Length: 137
Image 1: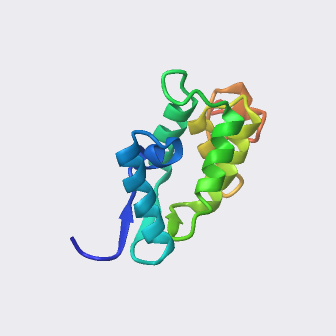
Image 2: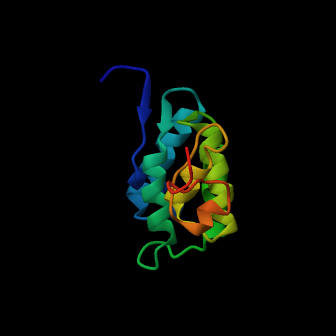
Image 3: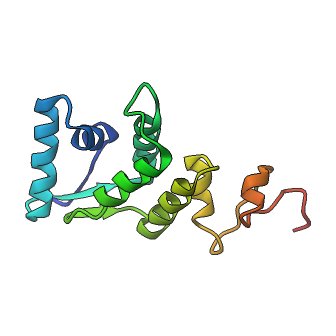
């Protein structure tokens, strides 16, 4: 495979964060260390973070609270050698998610306000600046 930036899948991030199983956690840690040293450039896509958020917060997964999930990911995303696709919106979405009351997908959409409109019927999102399709254009 050629050089350039490589995307990281959710399972690699989760192994790194949870440290299990040990062999895969070690391999993930070595990969992120290689990125830190500039050997490889890694990218994290918000779609991948959707899976990480789900598994990390699920009782069948890591069982973390929303706040703990957000804190873990905010810390992880600060690692040297990582490119975050749509970085600022992703960080803003994690802040919204940490506050509670919204699903991850809603937080991602709301993180694009006010640059973009967000249409929804969800009252919680409407309370945070989204628009109803029932409103006049």
